[in-house]
Length: 199
View 1: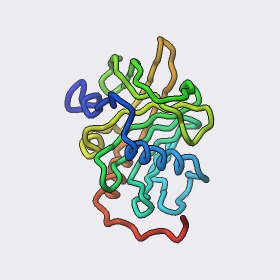
View 2: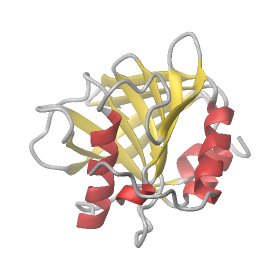
View 3: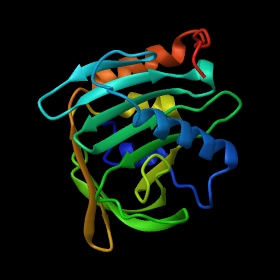
View 4: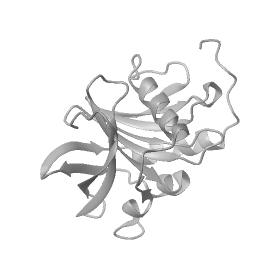
């Protein structure tokens, strides 16, 4: 990290419900993140790193109206960086997992965020929303000010813990962040893929 708060400075909390286009970006990401077996190369998704506790995959669904994304999956917990779709500047880091409380409507919540790269716990505001891919589940997301800057700052290994009302609701420890960065940067630079024959 270039500074103690480089990870946090790439985040811009959504202070109101996300715009419909931004919500559509998240919905598409969540839908494809829960479909099929992401542990192998399928369609426009491919595994780019596998470690002892999880794996990174990169998805390029721009031809179907989606975006480039990289996701680390460690059991039921996932952390994903989602680039903007065409015609939007909305990019996100999204956390999903079974310990995130369900919610019926999205709203800003005060949370604490611990990242091992700077060794600090910071008070943050995050958007807590329904997980449209899992009935009754919740997700946490932060809007990113710049997906390329977020990728440039990603740590190769990172422990992240999010707490709400003094209770831990999400934790993940990734490895291989630099391989994820290279894959995401390649996706962002690549030409738009041909549209898939499937809807």
